Length: 565
Image (cartoon, rainbow, N blue to C red; front, top):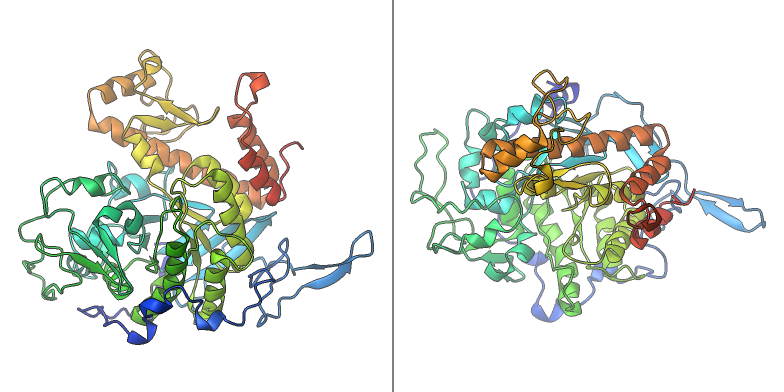
């Protein structure tokens, strides 16, 4: 057990979550005629000033009127007064966490910065996590093709946190069953995982399963995707869940032999074939309390980033603030679970626009939030729009709390967004692309190797020299491994072992990238690292490769990194 995990003995004991989700508080409900009205608590915000709080160098000082963090006034070479934010206090590595109010289950230590990139340790109840970090997605509580031992006992992986999804776990097997698992209960016990877990709230399914969803002020109602023989295909195309297995005939019935008897399903949580599933903010938090994840997400009203319905975006942004209040009110385990709000607002980064409105609402609720997520992206918007939203949010959110960019997992995106100040990422990309026989490798963009391709049929090299994954190395980690030709033949014959090997490799690649980014930040050479990474992928047309995309140049320039150096 890690030293940080041992500290959890100092936390209050965990009571059993209530068997029923809380009722909806009418004080947090808006009338339909008020859906598009600016929340009253934001009526006096000065939208001509940037929305920010808790900022440190190299950012400008915070504009939060309640903050004392206004920086120092100096003069530039032209004797023009300029204001710089104070430096971010750095904490030495291996400093023990102190779990204390107001956030009793999280301690965030920033060890080093390089520009806007940060190397930190996020201490949670099940151990420390070094960031920047990529979190593999195990939607239904498992990483497809890998066991927990494959992940924890491999030096190449050694993940400290994975992601699971509330909507999918509520459908199958049901969070009450998970709550009652084993002696201690919860998803950790259910899946045999003694490290950290983050759960999404189910908000993403408003986009990915929009055909099945009806969104109202109360919550989102999903048609059960398993009620008909073919409807389950709807969920197979999103996230890393949806295995197409029909629902168990006993689903929703209490067949447990546990002494902690599960309550009868309610209208909001029943996932039997005859019922629709209502997911209110209160239900999402109730499910996540049952799951027992270390970081839980607020249920937000999510709109596809490529939608052109501005009214819908406005309604969703305002509703996200109301739903956040309902999530905080429903949260029964703040002493050992951390509830992160999710910044919404579409692609609107204009002063006083929807992202600013959401951020300003979060600023008023900052005392309740141990960290923040940036949502509503990676849905088909242009890369230029993508990075500008990330930059806008990182420039506003407090520097002493973790920032999580949801649904982002392309290696180049991680390198760029870490430069902009992001700490945490998740995406199905590395594991899903492995199931198609595609391996992640260094080199020319897009940085992939198609093992099913004819070019690998007689290639007797491993996927990537120097990689320590179980595909590229033998059991001793000193060479050997599976050649590209062997993996090609196995994949062509649908051998499931090949998928496991490529999955292990792709996750090892992501973990190695994380370590390289952290080392560069520790050495204050992140600018050099990002330049080298980008030039490796984009050699330029004059060298037979591709030119660097303009969005990469612009994003890195915003982070203070010039590629032409």
